[in-house]
Length: 296
Image 1 (cartoon, rainbow, N blue to C red):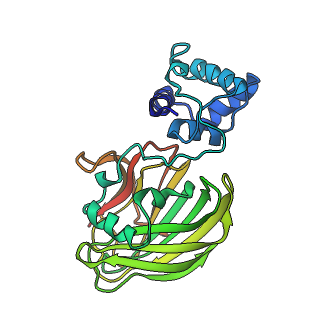
Image 2: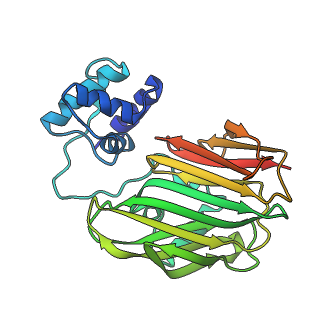
């Protein structure tokens, strides 16, 4: 498969202003149906159109998004041998977002894992909710994911977090669809990695829903939360709820394509009224970091 094809398709879709669902609807009207999830796989580099029916659909995609005929087809790579699986490197290297990437690699190795394993099974949909207490500290995280196995036998979730300080380990307070297994930490960098075992192994392409809730140790007062999307999901939601005794003066959603680039604010809102919560939701995001920040 060609990384150039996925990147070109993603840029073309973004410039067109069309959502994957609207493109899929028009493809169906043109009698070349392709699902939104398949379009997402194409633009993320997980797969590419190969059969004649898919290639006909791609020709219509070119018309729908307004690019020259053949410009996307020409970027297709060689056909992948059937039945094989190729580990995929993210469009944005993970080290672009971790303050101490070598610490993450070292901690993952203690679980026989690599950064690629943090995105296998692939996150199709992600919802993460944070609670900020009356001291202005982040005290908990609850995340729900719809995941899809890249290969047969997917049996675990590798869940890394980086804290600002590690006075004590974060605690798992709830799981659904998976169960806590192992935990490893790099104290010097406050890097923590959890391993959760899925309720049952997944076959390639099979979906599962999981939920994980953590209680953070005291001292997490960064003023932002962030999710890194090396392999972006179909949709991503970040929710932050504030204690009414400590409300921020300003709260906003942001995007950051690289840690060396400034944050770009893309949404904002007041949390002065109950339930004192801000949601940042993005559909079909490009690779990068997505977060919610606040100022006191």
